[in-house]
Image 1: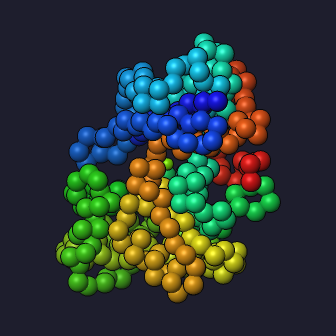
Image 2 (image 1 turned 120 degrees about the vertical axis):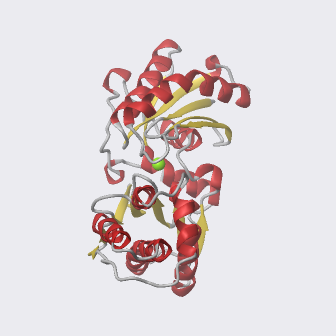
Amino acid sequence: MFLLGIESTAHTFGVGIVDEKLNILANVNSTYIPPKGKGIHPREAAIHHSENAAEVINEALKLANVRMKDLSAIAIALGPGLGPCLRTGATIARFLSLQFQLSLVPVNHAVAHLEIARYACNEEDPLIVYIAGGNTIITTFVEGRYRIFGETQDIALGNAVDYFGRMIGVEYPELINVEKLAMEGKQLLDLPLVVKGQDVSYSGLITSALKLIKEGYRVEDVALSFIEYAYSMLCETIERAIAYTNKKSILLTGGTSRSIILKEKLEKLAQGQNVSFKVVPREYAGDNGGMIALTGMLAFMHKVTIDPIRSYVKPMWRLDQVDIPWR
Ligand code: MG
């Protein structure tokens, strides 16, 4: 039994193919890179997806050595994400489902980031830190669903670092380049540390950091301070989440898991809390089709399907709204 999964929630159009033993046979991704100094424009990203979809699908099929008629189902990430990007992927998935008479399986993109990390790191029941351009979530599984033990109240951490990077003129990938600058910083400047209960907030931090740049402080020092405050806020809530949930491991997933400094901080945090720490492998860190296929297969084996006519996209679909019958 084979399933093909489609990812198109933001900048990446990705296709994964899995078999019933959850082997990922193909994971082919094409990512839209915005013009220098710009963020993702949803319409431009959607155009990229429609232009590259056929090639990515064909390449994945070839790589997996699977034909369309060998498939049992199509999985599609219906949200959360950018409307035009979601609709492009959903339209392709509905078409394939109807044309080849395949079941359609709805997948929540955030759940897929969690499941691919558990699968790739062989972790049964970790506290998961999901950090990406669009999400900043601390979560673990409790009674049928992933429950949120902390999140951002405004901008996501990945997007916060990218935006700050663009404003100070660093090039893509902003995360890596802002951290390079931060490593050359010498002085920790005063910035707002905004933790509200278990939640964090980054919008005021960005404004304050950019103000320091305008006031003439060294860009390396501001980068260092921005990164230190941003990550420390998160670590504070992770530490409390560990104490509260009593989990024995921390698992880092999402595109921002490529961060060098955040990994160092979480490693130390885990040591201090006497829990293990693992990071999702690089190929599954950013958005990818493989994670949608894997999660789609888990759902499909538990009879989760949707009628194509009812398969609306859900740009604001929250992680904790999704039943997880496979756990
Ligand atoms: Mg993502």
